[in-house]
Length: 359
Image (tube, rainbow, N blue to C red; front, side):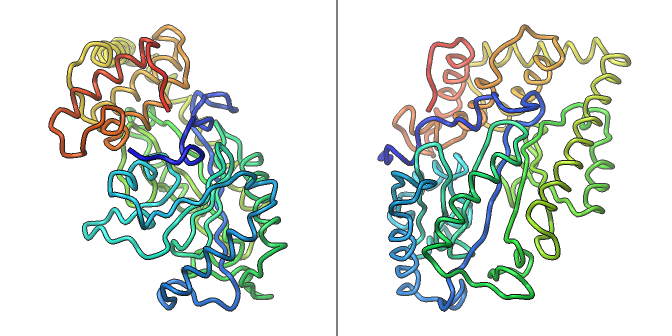
């Protein structure tokens, strides 16, 4: 597969080095912006979108936050390539054209600068700036993306209303345009059947949840993306503080649920963890959903001291490397290849044995 050297590479936001990384896999902060005097999505033309690309590329030159950034034209990529970048969370399902129709809008693109912040271009908004950090690191991720926003904002005129704030295609993003999220692992709350109550409570205080792959994705591996619902009426710092407090509470609930499992069902817990470890180490064919479910149990076992300590980075990376396009790219085959489950099982075994570097 053809991959721009600056558009992929390592995934430092999965290296397990961040705060609370036993529970929080990663943090993302995204800012939505649109260019003033340019029609928004739904009313703009291919010519307008090409103009957005030129304007943003020109503004990005010489910036610190996007130093060395390269433009990747999503509208020139194959479906497998688009899926590969989506699996790395560099582009959304919408920008990648991964719906049933599979249509990619003209001038769909993204800017990426190695492991730093990236910018989706001509998605629902003209610009979607985003930054990832390992673990529970809202302030650091926000600082990364705020630098890019400030540098681009000094060179571009963003659509802004003195009363409503930054204007966006969807009213739910008007105001700050900020969407912050944490990818958190909550297996004990799922196993004790408390997660529904917790998620309903979060919804009542302005948070929403999605699955591993973001909007439109279902629950996989007991992983939840928790994020703010509203962007209007509060400052960016207020939104981040609110999310941070609630995520801290959720982590406390998860730790309590783990204590309950250890006290009330130690044999069943140990059996589930060790069975998952055995399957991952010895299975000869694995579906993606099965692999993520087993990785969840192993991650729980490591976090609770049931399994020997291991690098969280390995378990985190497999959440990406075991996905269909990554497996297909690794072995040089297609998404429809019936041998993908066998290749996935081999990849997982080698990663857990430390015999293969992912990327």
